[in-house]
Amino acid sequence: MTIPRLRGAALATVTLVAVGSMVAPGSADAAPGDPAAPRYSAGAASVGDPYFPDEGNGGYDVQHYDLNFSYDPATRLMAATATITATAMHDLDQFNLDFRGPEISSLTVDGHAHDFTRDGQELVVTPRPKLKTGQAFTVVVRYAGVPGLITDPDGSIEGWVPTDDGAFVVGEPQGTPAWLPANDHPTDKATFRFTAKVPEGLTAVGNGQLLSQQTRDGWTTFIWDSTEPMASYLATITIGKFEVTESTTPSGIPVYVAVDPRQVAGSAAAVAQIPRMIDFFSSTFGPYPFASTGAIIDRAPDVGYALETQTKPVFSGSASVGTMAHELAHQWYGDSVSPERWSDIWLNEGFATYAQWMYTEYNGGASVSQTFNSSSNYGRAPSSSFWQIVLADPGPEDMFSNIPYNRGAMTLHALRGKVGDDTFFRILREWASSHRHSHAATADFIALSERASGQDLKAFFDVWLFQKGKPTTW
Ligand code: ARG
Ligand code: ZN
Image 1 (tube, rainbow, N blue to C red):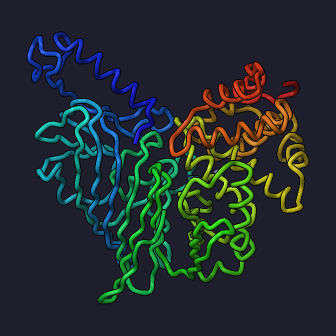
Image 2: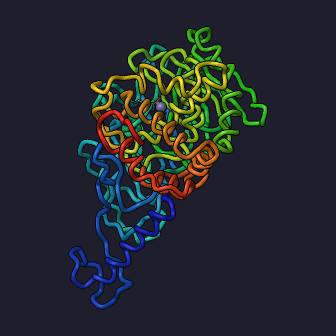
Image 3: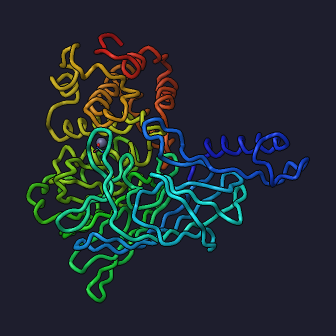
């Protein structure tokens, strides 16, 4: 699903190509002089995000992913059928999906079997008949084998991470193609359904709502439905032995929490506060953007981080109150409003970190100002390496370092001081509402802040986002 702004841009491009049809290359199918004749070309192999140049593809827009699979932790074998429903954005004679998963046994487009090629992350499909602009089409990919890990520029791992009782499934920023063919970039959101068959005794926990759970012949099948659009990096279907508790928040949002029995004691305080966190953030940032909430608390020691997987963040170890607040705040900032480019990561991590500071204050801990001024934040010496990276473009190796998190949150606190509380919280709420279930860029945030405050904030944001060095005046 593409936001109207991008859809408009894509259609504008199509119009231009059609007008130029007599001279543009690849026009073998166009009747000369007939501007309405289809003009087929290959969808781009990338969306052009410089941090992850293989990520995403052009030429189509995914509406829905349906993944039906079995997984046996004993053998680590997955057998899967992925059904992807998409719309052609221009006349397509070829398009790519991002896929690093196991061997493909068959691939069809609208029921026609097709050859395909694989080159690294690129799964190249040549649909016949070709696809026309605006045409809906369905790709079915069958594959089986052992899904793998992806190592990030900062050395951390993601993808399909085997655990001692199942698999820990995380995909930010590039892990989802390890197990699902996807248009793997946050600018193309879609709805998802997972049908996961796992050995009886294990639970498969996915995003969204549990539609059914059935055991037969020693296997249990779970169907999870994500009804709001989701970026592929936020998908999870984590498998293991879990204690499950279901409840509702005071305002009526269903809560599904799955905890590895070994993490129950260490996570009890964080789990108990989920409803309170959702209510606090709803009153501060605006309505919770999804139909359900919860958490998945697993044991994946090699991962060592949590992720804000949509509706149910995942934790690779026991969950602290602060990290739970951070991951739940991401549901507004990161999940519903996703980054347009990975260089915009401070819009995710800075916002979630600021929300975490606010929750600490709300809970009677350090005030936000105290945290801003602490030795791990503004208290750092000007010579610290903490100040030597441009916040609006930290680079793929530092995108999950403390820079986007802490300097991002400090930027928001400085903005709050600059525009005042009323305007600041109006900005945060409008950011969540105007880009709900979509994506946005740093320039959009600057524009919103200027519009809402009536101030020229160029110099302010220049100091905080675009310059190296510790800000001194702003
Ligand atoms: N967004 C996650 C969080 O803030 C961190 C993800 C880290 N990912 C990674 N591949 N290192 O909780
Ligand atoms: Zn985060």
